[in-house]
Image (tube, rainbow, N blue to C red; front, side, top):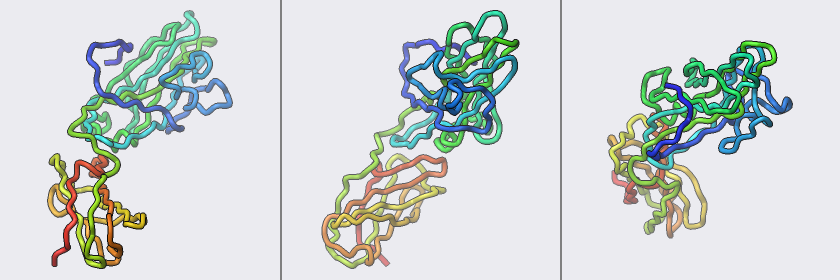
Length: 280
């Protein structure tokens, strides 16, 4: 249920997303007038109350915004998505309201209509699942959706104003930190021979359906490149290193990289990497 933001004694891991561009709907009026609407509401964690906002006077309008994205450097589970609007009404002679909204792909879902007061208050609606699919949130969902607010003013001279929009993702961290590099070095002694990089996904996540499977390498001279790999079984991958690539003797650096079907990015650890002669 929508609610005004209150503190609680339980601290949970969270990720904040801010507006970064226009979305599918732009109907409100910006202040300052020369600034795009999304830039008038993207100042979290600070707030420029009275200086930067969008508003509606005597009517109903809506803004939706493209939101910042995330890259999973940890194995995370997204347990809820909360859209938060900091809003007020300009005077107390008319009723003004606000509804926060989220648009995963093609349909906008909104929270309850909230009556605004004469001071800025945070209004929140939380979605535990994707309202368009009723499935649990994925990283791909989060990186695709828009969020925003619909403002309602019931009379001339009474502005419904919103000065800030942001999203709070509540996440559970599963497993150890996944670095964006792997300090793994290997002596390739037999220059100009075929080798394979074998990687095991240590936490049981299925690699079937991964959209990207590859290694990134750096040879002893610092030359870098990518090599596409294949899935051996549910959570193992193999990446052949051809003799044409293995043309230098010395220390080689490898980073295993996979993008799962749900959009989760795995790289470096927790993969266990072996480099061994390729067999026929």
